[in-house]
Length: 149
Image (tube, rainbow, N blue to C red):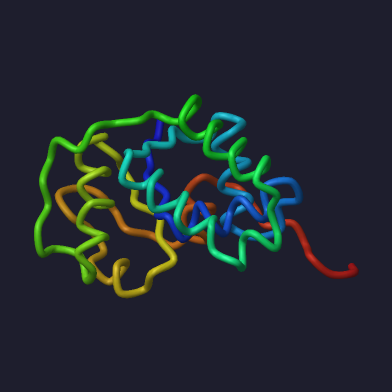
């Protein structure tokens, strides 16, 4: 099975489209839930996601119960790995080094991120950095039409 880390920006965007997936991040979360790939997370990713979802933009769109349920779902159903493979100075942002370290520690095949500068790395020690849309293509999941036919 394909193993992937979804960056915090993908997870945060995805939770908004989780109930009505019409965006690549929302579809990725649905694809994970039906078993199309294994999701790898770390405490670092969960902590950053919790901080992101506490921002006003997300608080206006999600109830506290929805946020807590999503975080609990990730903790219970995703593969939570300790960061055992240190990565320093590789990613464009030092915070992203810990996301890459999560992928290394969890032996991920892909790191899915909306950050173009991060994706510019293309690969790191066998881990491919791809956009949410590119990962959907890899999984052979198609976007549903969003407008009238």
